[in-house]
Length: 477
Image (cartoon, rainbow, N blue to C red; front, side, top):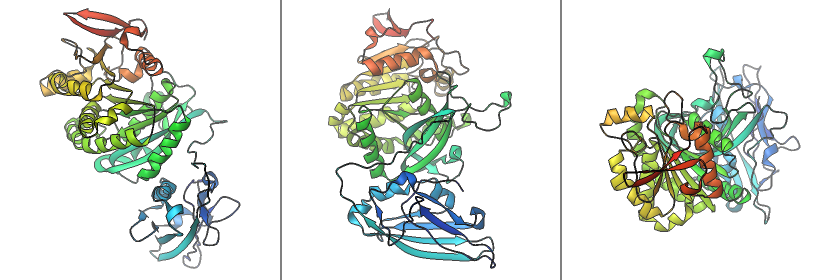
């Protein structure tokens, strides 16, 4: 049974299986167990607390259901033991101010054994707050000492459906769901190459993930909204008061988005708080039309998340980064948010729009001018004439895309356009913002120094037909 960092409670029960098997769960920190006499507190060292079998085996359970509650109205349900393992109930406690407002937490457990015998148990554990002037948070990062990889903790928000799958790569699907929050740890091997997301390859006879060779998700914990933002605020305060939000594009799974965010974080040497928003993309090339509908549907959730992200994290520097179709959601959500809360523009440091799959005419006429006026902060647009994904989108829609530099670069007053043509040699040439060293270097310079395009050494000025834009210098890929 794997060690699991979980709740602060004792689940202890015994079940007779045809007078042979006995299953006992216990939550312990190896020094003490938690029960109605041994209260849970806000000072408990949660990193040492885990739920495990004292006797028995997980195979002894056919069905598992756990309901934890603080009152009739405040409750959380786990419908499988794997869901319990992959969720962070601590965040739920903190988000509902359990230690400040409640004396007990109640547990209702129901399991079904392989012989279809049903067992239930109900019990309570006392809660006690210990006065302190220090904000106590739980570190979600295990030590990487003696490991062959580096761990990157990342925060996420998603309105994908929770599949409850124990395979982290399949945990969130392509269907629409409620807005959820959490933390994931993604590992990056020491052999990582700049701009790459190393994954198993059949050509190399690699049939499973290996953290020594591949970028992969190591853990995932869902969090209650309040705990999510409170803990993020604390981390940002400790780590330079800087954060970026990444919104992925079409044909991207949740796991793909998590690994891309980790790769960007590592390659940019970003020391602040990395966050990604994952909307219900189908993660397949055939799902383009569904993705178009889903990014439009996700706009309201994205706007609500952006409002909380900008107001509750108290960061000094907030960078908003979108790629491909994700630009549709981010730009529209931002404009709507600025219409409702114009004061939030002061929270934004920079907006980076990479290869936007947006109608170029709509972008020039409607989106970009409104963003320039309402956000009044630097906006950088990366475009390329080599982008085959946007070329395909142009053929589907019958109109040029904002990220397509072919037949004329999109220029809008107040937006710095960077032409990345010629820097990407990959198959689709669509993810150059994160895969090519020259663009990574340019974004790194932008974030670290705040220099505008005329002063970044990676760029050269282009003046054509009375318009000015910037081009990535060749030979620096």
